[in-house]
Length: 290
Ligand SMILES: [Zn+2]
Image 1 (cartoon, helix red, strand yellow):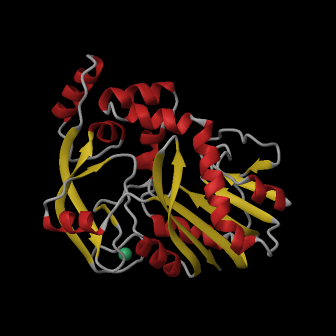
Image 2 (tube, rainbow, N blue to C red):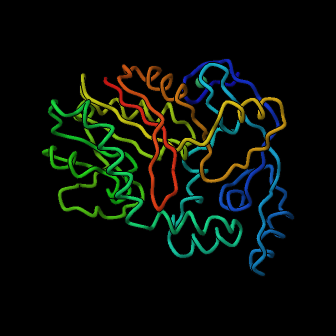
Image 3 (cartoon, helix red, strand yellow):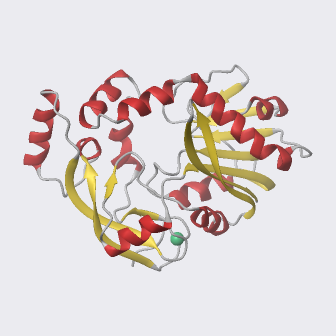
């Protein structure tokens, strides 16, 4: 039986209304893809043509928490190829060749103003809850080089860690990269724009929670990319999902139920917006306590 990978519910509805984006299909060993198709897609890429559509597949939607994801649960090993050289020059070139609209995304992600807009919006939201509490040891899980950590939060902590598989060095000397965090040792764990990329978000959060002390905080943030109308369309088969870098789709309800399923008490949850160059990037935020 399928289980929701956000809230753990068994009430999951399946519909065959998705296809893999070609870039994803080329980098992730998806067994449904026809080898001839991959050969043709590679050829088209090399000749500079844009290719979007690969093979169709199945989506699951949770009737309890409105979490949406491909039915197949990708392992960390499956996804490794997808993040090879992530957002580096070769990655961007190959991806833009297949998905021309990714050019604008790559440029925005590289823009310092995006990081600073994210930090400011985050601290504005967190400040009232954290103003009067002591946070000595925190970790940003999957935090890349630490550019999204609000400086106000960094300054409050005796020790700020990053657990990051890419090995990219932290931008601030106060941040330490580590792969070895003792259980129950953190006052706060953060996980921002990571859960939409992982095979099993609930398992990811549960592991993170073990690192947090009783009474400690857990903050998660994901892009807001799903609507209730879209979920209805997916269930009815009228909405086609393209599976690309963001394999998981969350609604506020999914975050709420996921944090509860991980044994946390939710203390704040919100739809938010990160605004940069007149463009709104909608996000979902959730702050919880162990
Ligand atoms: Zn669910």
